Image (tube, rainbow over all chains, first blue to last red):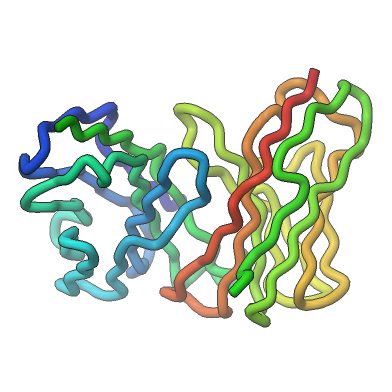
Length: 116
Length: 113
């Protein structure tokens, strides 16, 4: 079945450092790929998404490119801020999975702590 | 805008008791979902509904039931709670179709003792 694997955390960075959180996936078809962010005590919010190969999603300085050849969707940011401290989830939605309403299949999450 | 409203925000429940977590959305989305979030396990799908009147089982449905009487409401019921159901529960909704964004509620923290 479909699955998402993302790097284990926690990740601790100093402010203004470069961030990469790796995400790879396994899917039978051509899934849509997402990054969600969860701030402490809150629900999940969409950070960015890409629906086809080579698409780049971007938002708030974060970027991720849908790489079909490496089945990856790594999240990057050039200069992190303390306010980026959160848990980041990679997820996929399989267009062949209409029976589950295209539910998201999540990775286990990566906790990011940015220190001043 | 309200989006998705979950209630209660938190609850402590005695083992063996029943409980219903409520979820209401005001976006007229066809699809709705219940996930549970556990440390080290990420989010796992409990039940889903493609449209009013239909429901289906996700990855971890045992011990839970849902109903979808109308578009807006998607309650999750624990018939006889057990400690392993201690978790944070998230309701979510989406316009139907692959690639559409799924929107989440703020979560319901449930502790079964």
